[in-house]
Length: 284
Image 1 (cartoon, rainbow, N blue to C red):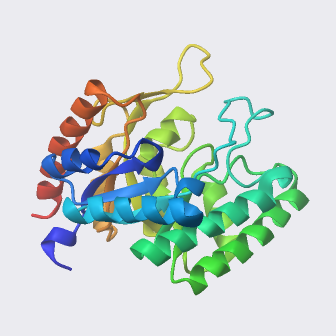
Image 2 (image 1 turned 135 degrees about the horizontal axis):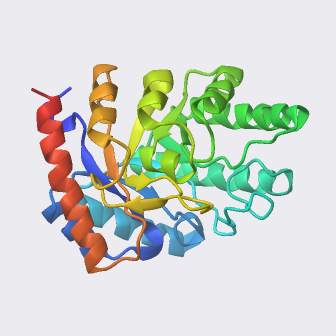
Image 3 (image 1 turned 120 degrees about the vertical axis):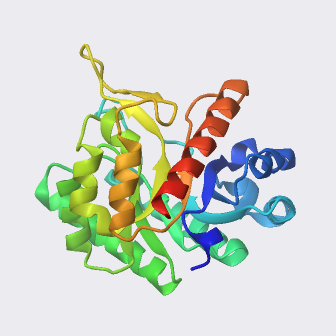
């Protein structure tokens, strides 16, 4: 692998906020990769979708940004920390068919126009009932087989699951195109497995990384708080050192979940400086 392709640096890019000059900022900041999300009918359907996709492709080519992965987006999701209200992902039977169909359209779009291999998803809260859990895994397996036939990988985005729960899913699916997109900040935000312990258990399955930091919930809060990269408790440098030793050479995708604007841009630039230094240290 060429040095320029080892641990490529980029950011999560929401198509709902797409303006061509945004890629100019990413290029100027030193990025050469991105993860696309927010893919909806404005890109998937008809002449409008084709024209918007063409504009997107032209902007990425102009600014030398390669889309390395796709994050499935479902506009009607409820992200409430209350499990009874939360409708994220594909686990709820009432939304499963619609979400899998939408995800299939998104993954085919990514393959057709950008040759994207890695598909990332918050699957949602895993069912407590064993029979319902097995039904979900059976449905997910069929979807992952479709991805496999496309030459694509399905990656669990870390969130409200422990390392053991994700390992159970991967083992039951029994497919070699299933892995993990590690977001160490989410593990703390949802008060789950320590990131270093997660890498010990599932590091060999990690095929993507979200570069994000956070602290665990305190004072009875339902969820922890995100921080700029390097300012939280994920021990991100140690996590990456451990992943690198296990053979990880894939993309490092910055995610900063605050509103677009000067603060987000400053945090992204700071994260790029942090990652460039980290990458240099790892590759020595």
